Image 1 (cartoon, rainbow, N blue to C red):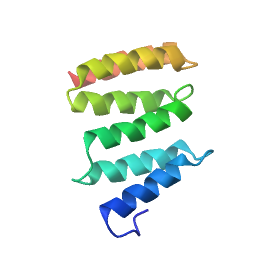
Image 2: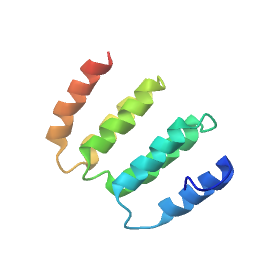
Image 3: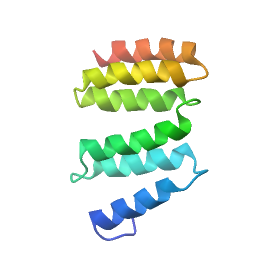
Image 4: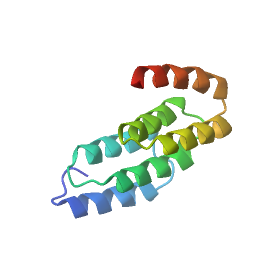
Length: 110
């Protein structure tokens, strides 16, 4: 993706890549990281990237949910934080582990 010239081309290439199935979560994280560093990336676009990843990895990856919650907290979207907490608790196979780590994160963010 980084070899592409402008932001629009980069975004289009990343969107195309993320539509593919079977891609590892590490690739989603990398694209989110790159896009987060771009001053032209909007919160709505970054949120859409997190949402695509949540559909694919939401049942198995506690760290992902904590990263998404941290993103929303940093954007002062506290209602979304509550919604994500609820979704993660419902979707994760290991919800108890998530609850413990969520409360640790919550303490660290305040």
